[in-house]
Amino acid sequence: MFSSATRAQITLGKEVAAQVRGQPIEELKQIINLCLKQNDQWVQAGRNCVVNAPDLTEGYLNFNQIKLREAFDAIRIERYDVAFGKAQEAVNEEEELAVKGFLKQQLAEYTNFKIPSKAQELQLSALSDNPRVLKPIAGATYKKLSAPVIGQAAAAVSFMEEKFLEGNDLLIWVNGLLDDLDWGEAGAKRFEAAVQDLGGLLGFGSQRPEETLGRGPDNLWALGELKYLVIECKSGAVRAEKISKGDTNQLNGSINWFHEKYDATCSMTPIIVHPKTIFEFAASPHEEIRIVNDDGLKRLRKAVRDYSESLAISGGFREAKEVMKQLQHYRLTAGQIVEMCTVAQRAK
Image (cartoon, rainbow, N blue to C red):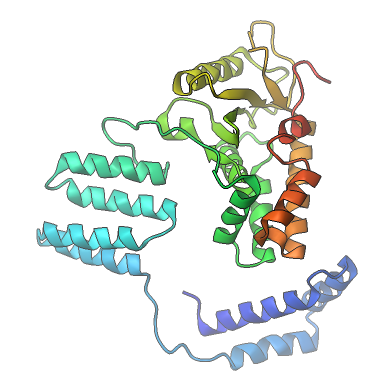
C-alpha cells in the first residue's frame, strides 16, 4: 500500500503525462529537463502536492491475505474445516488466473492434511491456472489449446482491457515484454514467458507446454481455423555458429508431440527462434521448419512496439475495429505474422 504522499506524487505525474500525451518529442524534452535540472517551480509543485496530500482515512489489507491468515491460524489449532473454508473463500474471490492458481495451491496444502486425493485434484486445477505452481504427484494432464472464439482482434482487446487502464500502462508493459524478448544466454525462461504473453497481446491462444508438462514445445500459439505455431526458443544460442543437432531434435520432438495431441484436422508450422539459419551437418530438420533469426526478431520487436504505440496514443486498444486495423498494418495477423518475422532454412 502506498502512503498518501506517494499516492499524491503518482497522481501529479499522471496529470503531467496527460498534458503532454500525443505531443512531439520536443515537448517531452522540456518536461524532462524541468525534472533533471530541478527547476524551482517544478520542485515546489512536487512539494505542494506532498504537503497537501489528504490523510488516509483507513488502512487496507488484501482480502486474500486476510483469509489466508485466518486459514493458517485455524490449521495451527487443527481446525481443518475452518482452514479449508477460509482458503476456499480466498480462491472464490480472486479473478486473476495466476493468483487464483497460487491460492488453490494453498488450499491444496491444507486439504492434504485430511483428504490427500482431493488435494491432488486441487493441485492439478491450480496448475491449469498457473504453470509456475508445483505439479501434482501423478503429473499434469494436457488441456488442448484453442484460438479465442471471439476472433483475434476482440481477443486482443479483451487481453488489453483486463491488464491496462490507459495507454501509458500498455506502453510500460510492452517495453518490459520487449526487454525480455531479446537474445541473451541468461534470459531463456523470461524469453519463453514473453512469447506466451505476446501471443495473448496479439489475440492468439497461447501456452507453454514444456513448462507445464515437461514435454512439448517451449511455446504453442493457436492462430485460429485449427492452425498452430509450434515454437522452440533458443534465445541463448548467441555464440552458436549453426543450429545444433540437439536443438533440431528438440523441435522435431515437439512436432511429434503436436501430432500426438492434435488430430489431422489441425495443422502446424514449426518455428525455431535462433540467430542462425543454417543447421549443422549432423542435424535432420523437418522440411517445414521456419526460423526467427536476428533480423526476424528485430522485425517482430519493431512491429509489436509500433502496434502498441499506435493503440496507446489513439486509445484504440479498447476498440476491436481499430486493433484489427493496426494488426493488419503491422503484419501481426494470423495470416501475416509468420511471413513477416520468419525465414526459410539456409536463408541469408
